[in-house]
Image 1 (cartoon, rainbow, N blue to C red):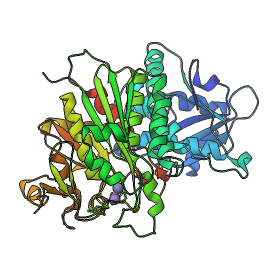
Image 2: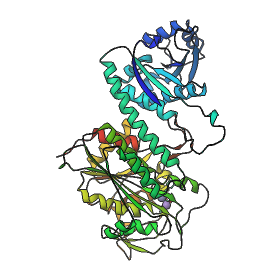
Image 3: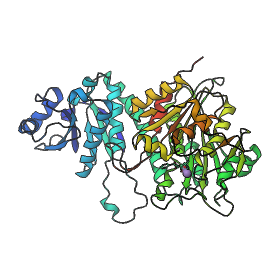
Image 4: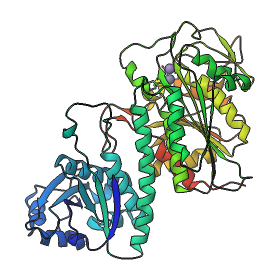
Amino acid sequence: MKILVKKGKFADFKTEALVLPHFEGETKLHGIAGELDRLCGGGIREMVKSGDFEGRLYQTAVVYIPGTGSARRIILVGLGKKKEFNREKLRGAFAKAAQRARDLKVKAIAVSVEAGEAGAALDVAEGVVTEAIVEGVTLGVYQFTPFKTLERENIRELRELTIVADREPALKAIRTAARNAEIIARAVYFARDIVSTPANELTPTMLARKAGEVFRKRNVRLKVLDVKQMQALGMNALLGVARGSDEPARFIIMEYQGAGKADKPVVLVGKGLTFDSGGICIKPPDKMDQMKSDMSGGAAVIGAMMAVSDLGLPVNVVGLVPATENLPGGRAYKPGDIFKSLSGRTIEVLNTDAEGRIILADALAYAGRYKPAAIVDVATLTGACVVALGEHVIGMMGTDEKLINLVRTAADTTGERAWELPLWEEYHELVKSDVADFKNAAGRGGGAITAAAFLSKFAGDYPWVHLDIAGPAWLEKDLPYIPKGASGVGVRLLVQFLRDWKMTP
Ligand code: BES
Ligand code: MN
Ligand code: ZN
C-alpha cells in the first residue's frame, strides 16, 4: 500500500473516502468533524442524532457527500467511550474503517490525525497518532493470496492511504512517523507472508534464500551456515533434530551495526522450524498443517532485522535463526538419544516433539560468542503456554529484571502483550536428566516454564528473556488489525524494544 502525507485542509481533500473517528456519546461535532458535517449537508449530525451511529467501538457508517467538488464519502468509525480509549483501540478503529472501505471497493482513503480528537484524548503527539493509524490501516487489510488462482479479479485491495494535515511542525512529525510505521508494517507483512507460506514452499534452504533477498540491499551482513559448517562447530543439537528430514538444516546469522564497534550487541534468536510434525513422537493429524507456522519466531527476528536496518537504529543487533524441519524419517532422532550440544552440555531426548528447545540450545550458545548485552529469544515453543495464557498473550520468562521490564514496556506500547511466568528454583530441578545434563521434556505441569528453564541453561550469564509466542503467532479468529492466520507477532515488539534500548554501561 502506498502511504502519502499531503499538506492541505482535510475537508478539501479529494479522494474516495475520508475517515472520521468519533467517540461514543459525543453529540457536538467540533473542528474537522463540523467541517465534514457541513460538507455532507448535516448528514453526520443526523446519523449521530438519530442514534443510527453511536460511535460504539469499531462501529462503522458511511455518509455520502453530494457533488463532485470534494471527497466521495465519509467513513465514520466508533472509538468507543473516551474514558476507556487507548492506543490499541485507535489502531483497531482505523483498521475497521479501512476494512469497511475495502468492502466498498474503495482503493484510496484519507485520514486526519486531528479528526475526532483521538490524539487529544490520549494526550500524545501527532507522531504517535500517525504511527497507530498507519499500523492499524496497513496491518488491518493484510491478506495472503499468492496461492489463489481462481477469481483473482474479486480480490479487493486498498491501495493508498493519505494523511492530510495543514500545518508545520505537525506535518514534519507526521512525515517521520508515517515513514517509520510503513517500515515496521512492511516487516510485519514479510513475517506474515513467510509464516503463511506452506512448508513445501518454505524449507530451511528457501528460508535462508529469502533472507538473502531481504538483506542483499540492506545494511545487514548475512551468513548462512550449512550442515558441514555446523558439524565443524559442534551444533549437534540442531543437527540431531534435523536428521529425520531430507531437507538440510540451516543456521541464519544476521549482523547489523548501528552503533560503535565496541558496543555489545543485542542478540535476537528465533525458532525456525519450517515444519514440526513432532518427529517420532508424531503429532495427531488434526491441525498439524498449522505447524508450518513453527518458524514464527524466526520470521519475527528476520522481520525485526529488516525494520531495524531500515530505521537505522543506533544499536548493534544480531539475529540468529536455527532452521530445520522436524520429521520422522529413517534416520530420525529418537526418545532416549543424547546429544552433545554446542555449549558442551549434553541433552537427553525424552520427547522428539519438544524439538524447539533443542535447536534453540545451540542458537543460544552461539549467541554467547558475541558477548551480548542482552539475548531475547522468540519461539512458538509450547502448547502449555497457550493453555496457561490463551491465544492472545505472549509468555515471558527471563533472568534479568531490567531486561524483562524493558521488554514488558515494548509489549505494552505495541499491544503485543506479554505476561511474565515465574522461573523459580523448583522448575530448574525438573529439567535435570538421570543420564545426561538436561532432559528436553519434564512432564505436563508448568510446561511453558520447564521449557524456559531448559533454555536458561544455554543462555550463559547474559541477561536473557524468552518469549513464548505459541498462542498469538497463529490466530483462529480475526482481531481488529490482525486478520486470522499468521499474525507476525514479535516484529513490532522487538523493534519497539530496540527503539527504546539504551546501552547500559
Ligand atoms: N511447536 C510446538 C508448540 C506449539 C503447539 C506451537 C501448538 C503452537 C501451537 C512445540 O514444538 C511442541 O510440540 N511442544 C510440545 C512440547 C512437549 C512435547 C513437552 C507441546 O507443547 O506439546
Ligand atoms: Mn514440537
Ligand atoms: Zn515446535
